[in-house]
Image 1: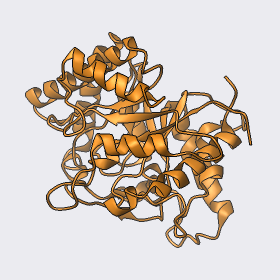
Image 2 (image 1 turned 180 degrees about the vertical axis):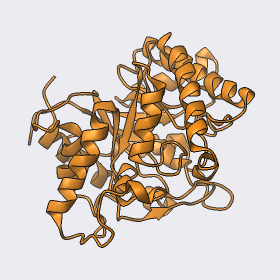
Image 3 (image 1 turned 90 degrees about the vertical axis):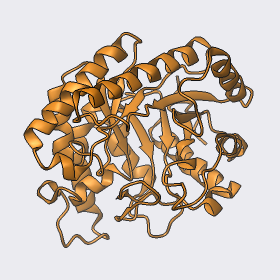
Image 4 (image 1 turned 30 degrees about the horizontal axis):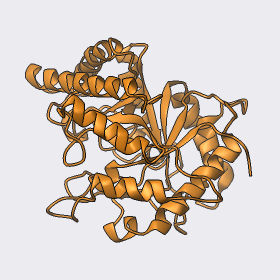
Length: 343
């Protein structure tokens, strides 16, 4: 087995919330997600940390300093770190009213304050703050030019706030967010934001859907009659996609996808996350992660110190099985063996 110790391997806790709720399944508690993460082990290798969403019911963004200290101690006692944070910006669309946009920026500020305190406690040595436009594709499409300008303006203001805390913001590549729903729209939004501390968060499931043109048929990269056995064409599509987005990429989610969209609870349809061992998965996880983790010449980018598994909207029965997390960890280890380094 490789001796690579970077990138660090993280699990996400927000799959216990995302897609859950009254019209779906009950939320899985933060402690339960933490327990499964800490218990996972493959060949003596364990997860190095967790990425967390700063939203109820897992995390109270306004918790006291003492509460944050207890959170840090709970994670540290399991020999884990905290990496990237998800800012709860959905109460204020980035292309909304002046007041809504101000709410968006304020949620980013609070998230940066929270992240700074975790750094001071020694539990968060790396990671970014993740954002999205908090706006639907349908509303964005009513006035694409001006709505993208508004999103970029809001992102600039959020970036300026984040810079005061030494934080970078990663815009999530997910097809359900207006102005971020295709690879060209995402690049346009990032270009217009024009701040040194804005970047892209690639998710192997969500961003994969960019190539299929969901919510933006004109930006489709793979042919409509694509044969999933045609690995050469798939690799060429990956090269085109990653050439465009890799220079922006500062946060990365390992995942599997079966080429379809899915939504549950209150979450809109986006790239379906599949189990690492799903026979219907269209990705060669280890190979395809390399398109993001290496540049066009095959050299490691080392653009981030950790990678995270994201498996939102899995059934609770699946997430309650420890073997699920062992299989996920095994897939993460293979990615690090193939594309990691010693640091």
